[in-house]
Amino acid sequence: MKYNLFGRTGLKVSRLSFGASALGGVFRPVDEAAGIRAVHAALDLGINYFDVAPAYGATRSETVLGKALTGIARDRYYLSTKVGKYTHPGGYGQDTLDYSRARIRASLEESAARLGTDYFDLIHIHDIEYQGRRHTEWALREGLAAVQELKREGRLGAVSFGIYPMDLWHRILAGCQVDAALVHNHYCLNDTRLLELLPLAKAKGIGLINGSPFGSGLLTDRGPAHWHPANPAERAVFAQAAEFCRAQGTPISKLALQFSSQHPEIPTTLFSSAHSESVRRNVAWHEEPCDAALLARVQQILAPVMNRQWDYDAPLTAPAQNHGYSTVTNLNASFRA
Image (tube, rainbow, N blue to C red):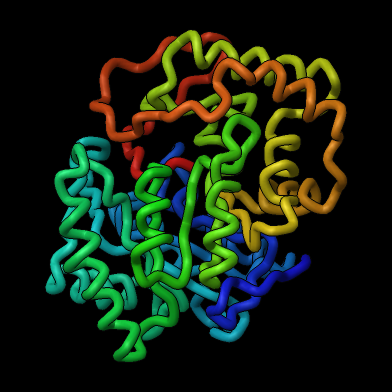
């Protein structure tokens, strides 16, 4: 595993990092023991950055990750969680967004207890665009001030956001005091807009985390969960790309992981898994060169959906038609990995 300097934070992060959303059953039911083995496999393979959130699995992801990290020397890994978004049992549509100083401070204490730590290397302010952006300004004012206050107190090392919309990213990187940025679904086979942020991030010393290399499941043979906002015609384009890759003897997920994780100016790419064999496979794929000819052909197929702006905040309706994908019906869609 290779490591990169992470902006001006002083951290040196592994090229691949571990997103713990899957540990909470966000995508499908998960065996806790298997999830713990997945974390240990990641550590053994040199992954040193782990990210989680109280919203993932209604705190279950934090609980399982905390168990997995019990007894592991704290200097072996960097750890981040999120504040501001809380998913309750019952899943999609049951989210609470609260960016008040009091709730953020309480949230940090609750997460610290579940994760068995008194210090976080990063804290991300979570999904401030949700619920029609009704809470965005609140998060940018009181929420950001609260996290910066916790940094001054020594409770955390770096301040970040974890959001999707590109217009908000341009605004945050240009005008907010942040150390890092968790950008999801913007550097994968079907979306490369994260590259727009590289010059400003480099100039300001902001560490970039590239989340969702598999495009929220669009870039897998299984396909996305039914909550994904892509319509049937759009899903069919991804199914065509996946079928083309299968015909060439390469799963589309392999190509997606390689493309997303091998850009030399992106410090780390965050994937999520609850199975040790998947962790080992992803690391092996990352270390192999990407097939440039296959990449070019697949991106030609994906041209109709390239840089498509998905509305992850759209209300959940009936499950999407399959169109060649295996539909996953887990309603807890708090993360898009």
